[in-house]
Length: 384
Image 1: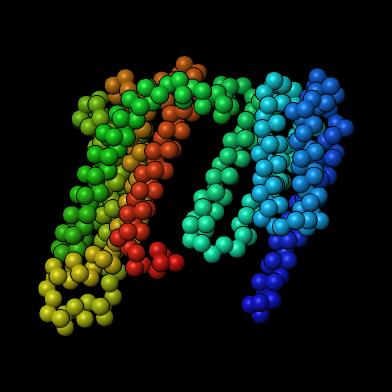
Image 2 (image 1 turned 135 degrees about the horizontal axis):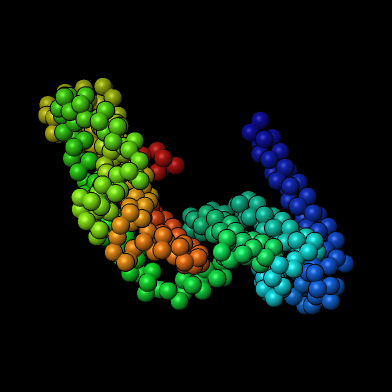
């Protein structure tokens, strides 16, 4: 039954691939006689737009007919998609708000080609661990690049106002021209408020969790209060912290501490309780006291829970610091810049700050994940 299932799955994937290939052919050929922009048929006769349907249609015919080695044809499809995307971006760049049905059919063909390549790439049978990791990185990277390409094509082709949604090219240009400002904001928000608040909040919560596990009174009295405090809205806590600790980064670090303390506390307490009765009885037969059992059995068993809290807090800390800066801060910081530039209608700068925050949060989360793999290599979720 398993062999039949695998064969059926492979045939289904091949059928999807062939259907997509013929859809690309149809869209590419249909778009040739149509007007791409409102300026008339002369625009579609340019090399920028004529090359895209020819390349997409030719590659799709080869795929549909099954011509050539699989991986070579797949790489050719990737090259064709890249060239077609470049041509469409060049063509739409000089035709703001003029895109018509011919242009959008080409965009649809490019989307189908990109989808088909990723679908075929995920089916590559590779044995090398490095190749598997490379494919695992390449697939989401291609998806992200395609989102940016589609974003650019839609915003320019539809003539969306930059105040509502600037194109990625404008955001990238603003990012490159504002590096000193972005770096100063990053230092103020992330390197000071986020990292210090994250370390203090998670570290103190871990210590309190040990005490809660040891003292039953604290378990019954502190955890319900923790649930109450964790439900407090950040927009209500942030102004109070600014009044208590001033306008500089300590007040934002205080907000981060509040946001990260109780997720770490609850997860650590749950992790310490995850060791079952048989394992504890085994430690008792070895004449292990409380602290020996804690460090040799219960803390290792709690590591997956602890790292889950650390990963959750890596994003909560950044959100808390940025939101706290909306309620009072020196003239620097990600939250300050976002609120100020929105009032000035400099939306491209706002998106540049969002990009910095997203990049910093992703890298921070990735580092915590790497540490998790180092310290919990024995756990089934990591071994798998």
